[in-house]
Image 1 (cartoon, rainbow, N blue to C red):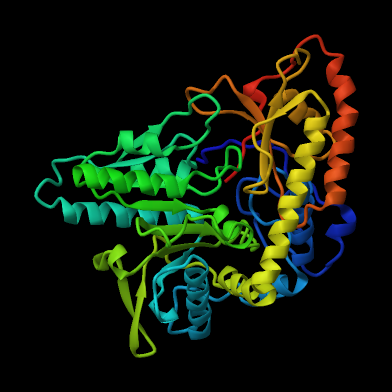
Image 2 (cartoon, rainbow, N blue to C red; image 1 turned 60 degrees about the vertical axis):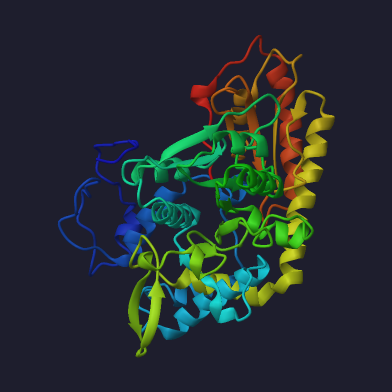
Length: 467
């Protein structure tokens, strides 16, 4: 069974007579079952049309302001994706040039994140199916290094991982799957992410590492990576505890290098041992590709790396998955080659400009309060002001959906579940014109919402938000 039940119709699939007669030789035998294989084949044109028409019921991805993942790429990139969908990225001896492009991407990211290496070939990292797998790999490396340091105490001692309550669910999955205690710092007041003080409070001799989020999915804010590292430096001086830091840069690691070059968050901080990002978010690639990098070979325990014969040489591999298409890796390299540093900076700046413009416009309506302003990630969260009694954020989300916009409404984690917000993610392709269209629709629904006596919906009706 699936974990999520969809609409289950027992009625057979209906076939338009015009489509059914499109290929009189192959034809189509009706009725067509929904939940078992049809008795025989059908023409590809008919199969395509049936699937195509069902997918019309999905939302418009370009108007989905909930998701961080890329919803538009250039035609040339789309062509490359189609041409290379059959390449299995794990078969490095069969597809050596795909392996070469993967290594180039790793070297590019190592340079972008200031890894302390002299030779690009020394960059330590791998491609993944997304940030979730990359986080799992980084967590595994943290745990294994802790086991080495505490060989005399493990497995009696239980390892823990320190992070804020705003972390993406993949970190809680990691702790569950790899038997690590998740130490979540609660949200306090108007601070919606991990602070340096909280990180130090939760660390002890069983802490495998601290996860700092460069760009929270809750509100788009950066966690203070430099302050967290400085606090952990002071902790080591006082107690001898040496706690490494992993930076979850799922989104921010592809924003900060271009728009915030003076911000210290990456391998320039010696305590940062690993970084991950999603190539399919602000790396501008369709789902799914991610990247995990370590500051040096010492940061990634050798026993976690598998080695395969690569053109008679030694090719190290590290990953949870095996077969997967190389097309997304190739598309990532296309973006690096196509845009360069200045191109990425222009794209990300345009996203931030749209986010900040839209945040200002929403604040000027007078009935919303901004939590963030889109000046870090091109993402911002807002809620209704205290004097608004007729509607809530869930009503706003529902009414905007009627206009085609997917703007998620949700409550914050424990200790701030009293706070419900809307969140807008501005991605490449979401232009100022589209932002103005969103504002026009928001202004249209507000008079209707103000006529309500009280909020009509609630958290149970809220849309989910996506990493």
